[in-house]
Length: 232
Image 1 (tube, rainbow, N blue to C red):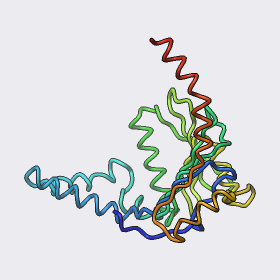
Image 2 (image 1 turned 60 degrees about the horizontal axis):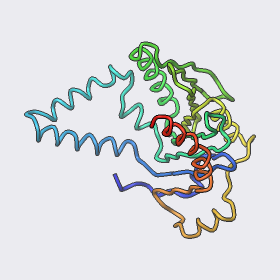
Image 3 (image 1 turned 45 degrees about the horizontal axis):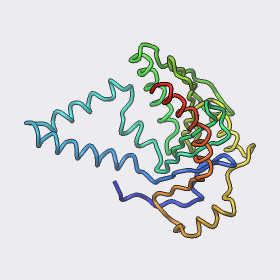
């Protein structure tokens, strides 16, 4: 799992201008799937008779249960770049937003897998989780409703990226950045200075602004402290 393809800053998805930070890593989903499955099969054989055969039978039934093949339809369709970013301007409770982007290799196959998987999820949850599909600037997008959840996550599938946000506005902003209609993140002078110590190629990188998290901690500490006092 540690043997991953190196990436560079140029491989980043279009992050929001003024982002409070991001974590990006290179992760080969297909190779990791095979590696993890191999470990599970060996462990199953070690703890029970014909354990590996039972795992194989379970995985053979997976497409019927999920609505797609987890290896060929999902893992093989995803790229190896995975990025989580903080969006300080996102309109979510508390003003803290986050987006999750994964590069894509086969958007058509991935789109079919997601449609089938979301349908099965809705059925399995007895409509506690529902999704509405729509088009946003030529991309397939999904809006999610979860019973009693304070947020409305959303996702969009581009030919190069799958993006998941905590609300539809984050997804819309991501699409606009892809099209060059919104400003993208560029490293500040301080970030540029910090990045000088980072190799040009890497398999993982985190760049976070502690001032953002310190500010949120200062904002919410009195609220939590008052709750603790009332509880006591």
